Image 1 (cartoon, rainbow, N blue to C red):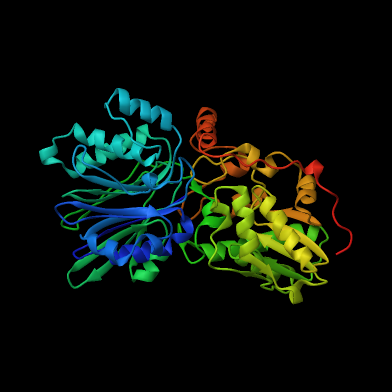
Image 2 (tube, rainbow, N blue to C red):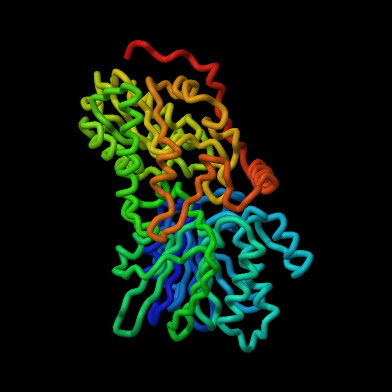
Length: 498
């Protein structure tokens, strides 16, 4: 999962781009990059770290041009180093610069095709190169002196046929304009906005609509499944829509990844998370739980916790304080690092939880070790009982579309029962969201399309992915030590006194 932006207007765009990328910083903290085009050449700067660390005044000064793309990286495939930071550029067959959000699942097949058919050998393990060189190779067979919008869309269509997985991309085509397109199922988000200026319109693409709020852009539309939108040098908009296909938008965007103030497919993320909390109320009541208060794991658990508290009629308290200068623990690449982030990031308010039965709501339980650390923090603060409540159903299948849970050995719900998980995380009770309720909430309605529930069901929208999943796991194992869920049977019994 990453964050991308693209801007095209009559004036210099780098200032807007940095603000836009900062608004997407929650989507990736490993690296950041920007490429601009000034009519003659690309200007590129990227590096490891946060947006404010990578872009200093001396770097920004060099990023001239009225067209630009940017990226914040969250590493799910390949090593985490500066060479893999986006954007990527190529002069093949003429100037292209590209960013993407997602994962290519048939990366070995595409790499082989590029080598054997197009005689192109990707330089890195970043799957953006596979998309970029496939698109570039298809453009190369056109009349390069007379490249038309139809030629560009034809190259996009072939790329979508050859490259499988989840991706939203934005590309600068030197001397021609700005192009955005998504995979045929629309798994990853991409939105389009516009701001009118005295010099003319500025168009933008971004992973989330919250970027537009900061920049006074008007939301125009979602880039739909398989859709391509091209904005030419005269700022004319050209669109090519795929035939009607089932949509499979990643539901984990709504549960966790997207910012609460973003609107996705017409749904405000904050409102949907409140609804998730209210739906959980039935399971809490049916389990006979009577908490004294509901609290959240900041900050993605807040709205679900408030919805649950409202529905069961108990107070909501913000009883865990978050150090906002720490990163998101979920996207830290190692378990030791995640636990260290949790320890330094969260601090319970002892006066609120001491002697109380506490229902703590988090967005999900993935590996279980972070959840256990949170339960321990609450017990150390004096909580009498701790009920751990997940606004997501049990995660039982790896994600191969860009979220860092691509190994079944990492998923505690894939290997242990709910009772064993409860014992392992040392809670008095674990409550999961019901899968059917989640499916009903995000069922296709009002023309917004369906969702991908593969991590909860094992049913992947791209079909049988057994071979691709093995390739993804092998690639990940080659770059880092895979976290494994510790044996729950080896854990001590729950404490009886607190």
